[in-house]
Length: 143
Image (cartoon, rainbow, N blue to C red; front, side):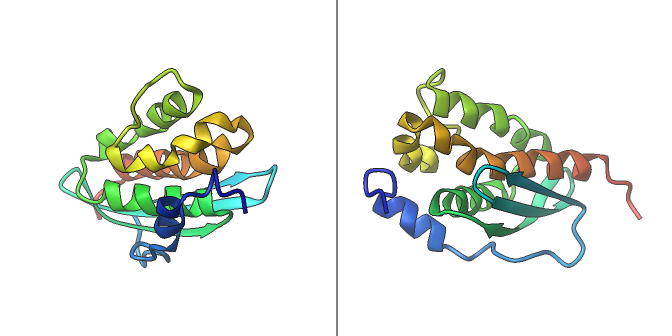
């Protein structure tokens, strides 16, 4: 394991299973893959009154992918649906160095990933899944 890349905070975030699994009746769901390494994130959302009411993710991948999915799921609950879609671009800007600060403070633990471009997608696939699921959720027709 690359200790410079996998700091203790990342390892702990990857172990956080509070939002792991699937939702029974998601209003939005998306699966994204990293074809280079086989990482996969499936993310489910439920909404209520324009906000994300519940998030669950099924993640297969490295510690970076698992940590990003866990951090993102915890952050998204309670947020306005339209507020989470821009996180996709914000995390990319942070990782590639065009933004100094991460989209939310908990993501600062991912700073070591900035120097390893080949691992950026390990982090961003969870954000892609969230954005795609949020768009579905925003366009969901009430039953």
